Length: 111
Ligand code: FES
Image 1: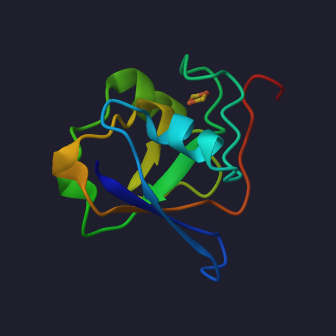
Image 2 (image 1 turned 45 degrees about the vertical axis):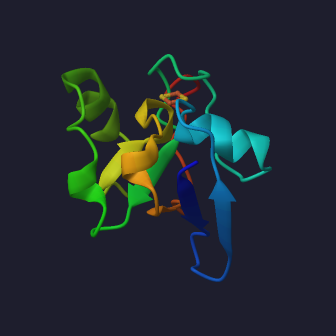
């Protein structure tokens, strides 16, 4: 089971979670009451699942699809290591993956 670490936007809180392989980061956040919205439930239409991946981990992820990148371009406070949590599928190679929650999210479904 890969371990994932979520860090709150202000850096004050950390959640270390043993997550099942094959689950999305968004699903893991929801299962553990972590405040990551995911308004479109993973259908890549909202960007409210935006997370900022720790720089040490970004190269362990496959690059974003064009569709994901287009949505990220519209996310709030996007950074070079921003990704959509619904598009990150966990596996043992991602053990230790650390992501920070953004201060807020743009919901493109509602804007
Ligand atoms: S949950 Fe909407 S884009 Fe990820």
